[in-house]
Image (tube, rainbow, N blue to C red; front, side):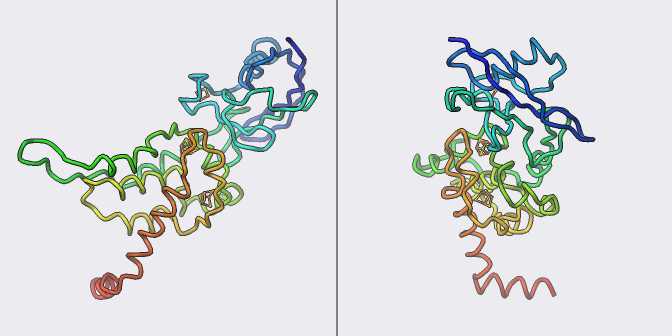
Length: 248
Ligand code: SF4
Ligand code: F3S
Ligand code: FES
């Protein structure tokens, strides 16, 4: 069945823009990205929209739909009421390049600050040995598709540009958690997690977990363990004394 969708799209660039209304014919079973593509093909050839896989796996098509960060390729039109206007805007936390395309380089800059993996040497027979249980703890974080929906929804930076310098955001907290939990990792990254990532600024609102399309339990399985680990070190009296002595 074909019907007319009321689609409202933010059009503009870094200097400003506005919401523009369109009516787009869509088919039952389609997703928001289908509607954007049809709009681009039939009415607005210059609409800037980023996408790649159309299968929820590349993380490119992130935008805000009716104010919530979502993958446009995985958001079915059937979730909206008949006649409801569907509003698509660029990710709010990152600077706009044009229309629905934002500059997400903040995330890559933060990624550069995460310490590198430093495994212990291989055993005499040339192998590593790990318990399957230990391997599986960090495996969940590997599902991340770098869509940055969690980064866009987090209130610490969503409306506070001034916090971006000190705060890496939930996607990067997964990286710290993975290092911390890796059975072969030899370095202690607690100081880096506290000082470089700003994990202490997270007040566990869990909005990041709610929007993650991969269903990663970002807050419970990554952020809270990293926070606990950092606190262990901060309140360890031996470490505290050592820091006092060596910083003199
Ligand atoms: Fe996207 Fe989830 Fe990865 Fe965040 S953790 S970037 S929401 S896949
Ligand atoms: Fe932000 Fe997630 Fe913490 S949304 S405040 S990083 S729980
Ligand atoms: Fe790849 Fe949507 S186009 S996740």
